[in-house]
Figure 1 (spheres, rainbow, N blue to C red):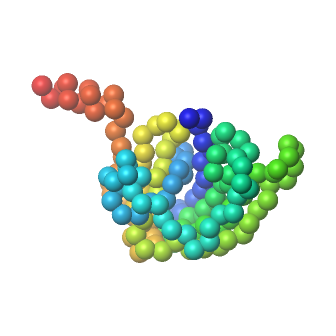
Figure 2 (spheres, one colour):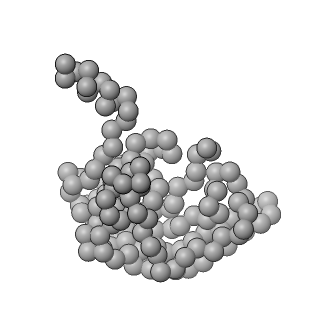
Length: 149
């Protein structure tokens, strides 16, 4: 599979440093299910991409734009749709939907890299990185087993 373009994530929180991680998904429930993808967050405002993909790097046909505010809340600001023709303008659909409840950001440094799960409780980010779940790479798991005997 071609590496996919991540969603856009603007961090305006003064105490949260995501260290260059890119947003790949927002999920709810048990992150151990569905091969580590949990259940996808259900947005009230659904995207409306064109019927056919425009690029193999943007198979779903849109980029979601999110903003983490200084209080720790997350908002889906808009959906961006690529132009139907080369060099055309991207269409922007304003949404402004505040996310609610308990959920996780699924973040990665690269498309094929391990996931970092950043939890939200009652719609607010858990600031302490010790509460975040960082997936180990398969080669790291193997080396840990070898070191244990």
